[in-house]
Amino acid sequence: PLDDIQEPELPDDLRIHPFSGNTKTIVTAGDSASVSVPLYPEGSLSSLAFPFNRNQSEDDDVEAHTNQNSYSSMRIHGQEELPEASNVDSYARWNIKGAVRAGFKKRRCTIAIIIVFCILAVGLGVGIPLSSRGGGTDPPTVEDTNVPSLAPTVAPIDLKPCFSADASITPSEQFETIRSSLISQNISDEALFDEPFSPQRKALCWVADADQKSTNEIQWTQRYILAVIFNELETPKSKFESSTRLEVSVTECALDGITCAEDDITITQIKFDNEDFEGNLPREIGGLVELRVLDLSFNEDVTGTIPNEFGNLVSLTTLNLKNLDLQGSLPSTLGQLTNLEFMILAFNDLVGPIPDEYANLVNLVEFDIDNNRLSGSVGHIVNQWTSIESLNMGLNRFNGTILDDLIPLSLLRIFEGSQNSFSGTLPPELADLNFLSIFNIAFNDMDGTLPTEYGEIISLEHLMIRNNDFVSTLPTEYGNLKNLGKWNFITHFFVIFFLSSSLAQQYFLFGNMQQSS
Image (cartoon, rainbow, N blue to C red; front, side):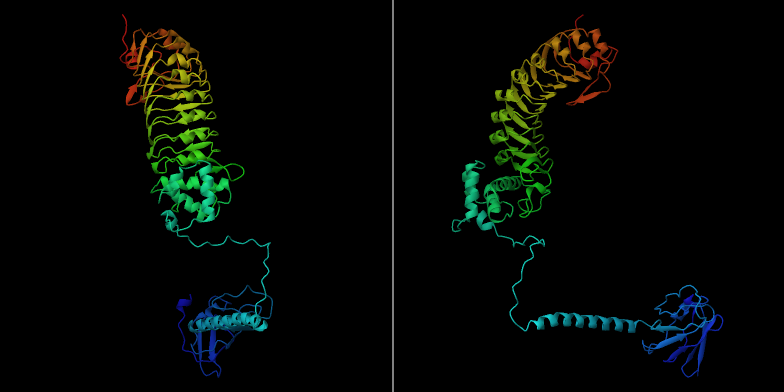
């Protein structure tokens, strides 16, 4: 190893004379002194890496001859090993420039000299073209239109004077144009445009005076509505960064939660579920007339009422406002949404009846208003929903009869009507619902007997009829319900045990049902 080589005391001018065996003899130019050190490995000059005298010039040649192997002539640096043996003269001469030195001081000097040389070369390269112009005026630059350029950098605009509705500031022409357009479309209440720091005022200022993408009515309307949403529904955990959650140079179609049509302009879906939004549900959403999906679910701090303007969303197929804190009554205008397939309003604080206009929602597949405070009779409405598959009305205050109105709903799979005040008897015709798998009418005011025909509903998996006023024995036909009773079912904190082929579990299944002798 090179670490074992003792550093010899060497004069300034060195010559390496022919090697002898496994040692090399280093002598001065005048052959007045010599030092022998081991050669590692045999036939290699790598052992030359021991320190030379620091005063040795980098330009000094070090000559070496070897009779151990035959090498071709080359220049080496540092501790590089020589190539494999070749057939050239066994006394090939090696010319080594600066291959080994005592330290790295001169190498650093060399690097510094190279850097200085490069700087001078660059300076000369720049100076020569400039001097060739003769100090005259630069010729005009011709723009190459084939080369794409970056969008211009726009300095941040101070919108606070606009936000404050300062009367001393004259609105821009763009401001007035967009304002008039939004008023004509009835997107917002006109008075809110003049209210200092209102979400509508801030959104209008941003779209008119800062936004770079609001170039036509469709775009400025959409971006204004989104800006209102993000100003109205404040959140500490938003996925959007700016004060309006919109970037002035980024299209709205690129935002998370937004889906646009094939034209990459028109918004068709908004999915802002579980965003920790808080504030009032803005009416401006009703201006997105091409919207097909609106999902704001699981934003528990969003309050207010469902705006009447949502009735303008005539293309809507999915409305999901589950688990918000909405209050007030259901707007009758939602009855205009005849393309609606999924209407999910569960876990809110809605009150009052379901408007008769909802009978027009004939394309409904799922209607979920579980856990509200809705009331009144609904049978005459739901019997029009012939496409319905899932009807969840539990934990409300509905009354009147309803089960007879389920008979026309041939595609019904799930009926959840527990914990209301429904009355009447169980109609045998429900046995004709071939897809019915969940039937829950527990905790109501039902009476009468248990139809034997229900034993023919082979698709039935969950049957919950406890806490009613039925007077009947348990029909033996119910033993045919082979899909019933596969597991325990927990709903609203009550554990219901399901019927198996044995009738011994009837007490658990039917709870407080009165039994005749």
